Image (tube, rainbow, N blue to C red; front, side):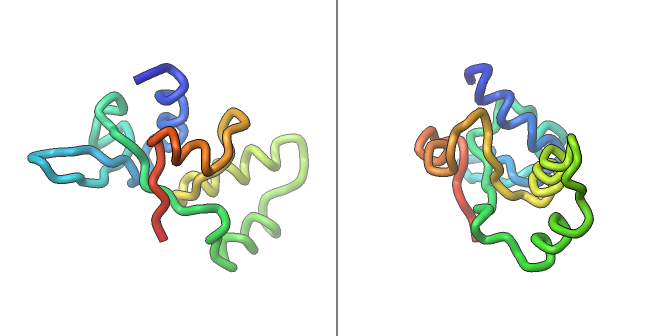
Length: 104
């Protein structure tokens, strides 16, 4: 696993989205807690395009626009299993790299 992929996966530490093959079956586990981050094959994440009205409203109304507003918003969305931008890579790029599979 290259360093960039490790850094991407680490952002989702504690979120139940890490796919890991065990006994020839893929299971989904909490990243870094239930499964070592180096064993994770990909993350199963929701597209930001599918954000719920409630999640959108929370981000809009409860997370400020200040200096750290965007960072807090991204952290909140990651904690809910949404795919957010990483190092300038788009959702499509992350999927093509095999790091992410989009779920509904």
